[in-house]
Length: 235
Image 1 (tube, rainbow, N blue to C red):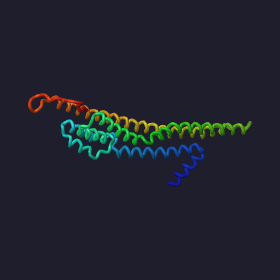
Image 2 (tube, rainbow, N blue to C red):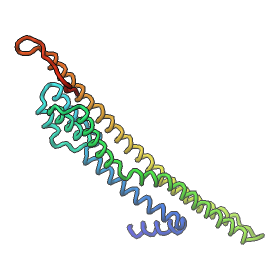
Image 3 (cartoon, one colour):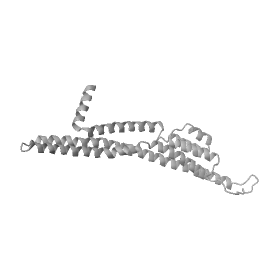
Image 4 (cartoon, rainbow, N blue to C red):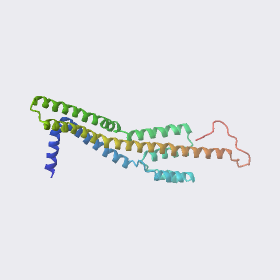
């Protein structure tokens, strides 16, 4: 069975020529890269927000230790950035410093997830062009044979050359279409992760700002309002 597959691939490559061979190499490379991205997304829990939602719920109910323990071993970009936000907010860090640190962490994690996207995009764009290039070369060869035939023109010569030439276009499209669809799916998941990071971290900062405002507005132990001097902490 394995020998039959090898023979079929060999005959397919002989028909398509070097262009089909190049497309085959590109398809193998794209498949390996796609499988690697699937494994990376699964390992880093991209799109899985259940743990982050539980931590956010605990944080809103003033269980800061529980919220941070839920995210202690976080692997996803959302979990790491949310844990960073909660840690710095609990330490009463400046809001600007918290936002800068969260942006740094989120940017680095999302950039790691996007590695390989340009290669997939290049394959999706180049594969149809390679297929078209192979078709043009095949058509040139077919018409050359037709010219060499002179007056004894056999329509099968032209027909056979045309379908072999169109084979490369079909191969190029067969490589480009699934790669383009999967690349769009990967990019959508990363965009959803980015929106979740921005939304949840902003929610933690807003909640911390409200708590700080309530503490500053609350009366002191002797019944007189607190006097707030200098730059007050705000999230």
